[in-house]
Amino acid sequence: MARADRLMRLMDALRRLPAPATAADLAGETGVSRRQLYRDIATLRAGGALIDGEAGVGYHLVEDGALPPQSFSQLEIEALVLAVGELAQTGDPALEQAGRSALARIIATLPDDQSRQAHHTALRSFRPAARPAMLGVDMGLLRQACWEERALDLRYRDRNGTVTEREVWPLGISYSERSLLVLVWCCLRQDWRHFHASGIEAATFNGRSFRPRRVGLLREYAAQKTKAAAG
Image 1: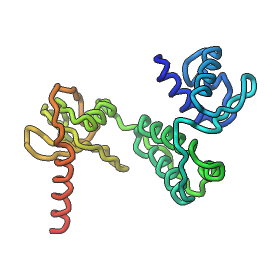
Image 2: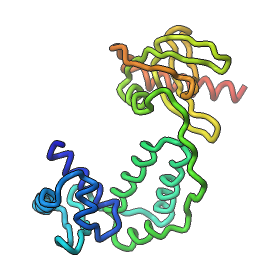
Image 3: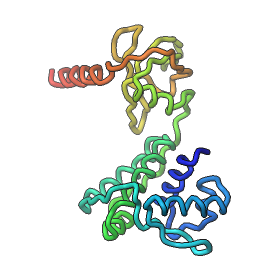
Image 4: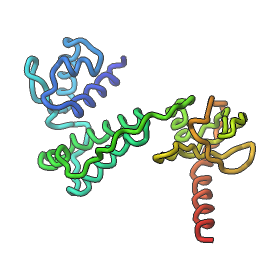
């Protein structure tokens, strides 16, 4: 593992784990030996991170030199914690973990009183986590295609069992309690289409880019939907 990646994972672990985090826990999170962990702690301290504690006691991230101080109202803090808790309903473990990691980074920059509020909020999501959807496609690949505006060759099985193959431009992904949909521009039909992620049997990058069309197509799609709703 590259040194920069290792140090970033260590900072994330210090933000997430209950303090004081033991050397064993931190070493397990970053996949290094304890001896290497102690060296990495020293490197972070030298870089400006204020880390309290020592070997045999545990470590606590007092001040994160990599993140600027932030301040939120109590209701804003409640909203952030509630929103991240709701990510469990997407059935996408990677997305849920990304939200928890981002929230931990935010909390690490808060003043002490606001940090305590974030750990003891009144608003929580206690609904059972949704079952991960049975997918034949990597959601990470679909997200990357949207972000980087890269075309995909896609094989799709619809609700009637009909299989088609086509080139699509992925525009966005929508989550609901009943479905996980991918909004695309279909090059075959020259129109927008919603595909159920569970029906996507294969998706591969084909080397073509549709940049910078994504934002414009999304605006056109939203305008079309607004017009249809008003009519």
